Amino acid sequence: MFSNINTNLFLLSSGSGYGIVTDNKDKNPIYMKMRTLGAGLGIGVKDFRAIIIFRNQDDMDKFIEKGWEFGGQADAALKSGDKGNTYSAAQSSDLDIITYQLTEAGAALQATLQGTKYWKHKDLN
Image 1 (tube, helix red, strand yellow):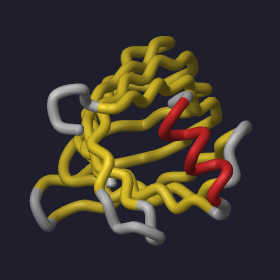
Image 2: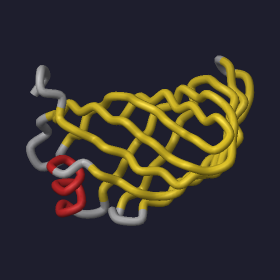
Image 3: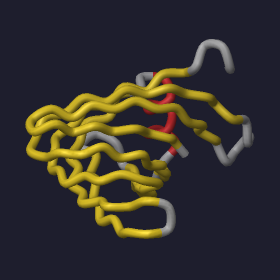
């Protein structure tokens, strides 16, 4: 699971966050950081959690060691506390993964193409 803050201002989208990847084989956590940059239409700021499910071991290993993900994202969010609602969809172009976004708070309306870089947190691993 990754904790993310994403900002979208008209044609530019950016974000940063951190998270943990857990391999079900050995259960050892791998602490990671991330940054994302994208282009598309939209406006808003959103605090969300991303749960990434890897469909195969090779893609998880690629994610941990190389850390690049490219894809598209569209969402509409208006949420504060328990009030409000969100709708989102994301598709990775290079990894066979399923991504769920759980919006904590924010207001956003966006459709972007994004590249995200993940890397191991050097102080925690």
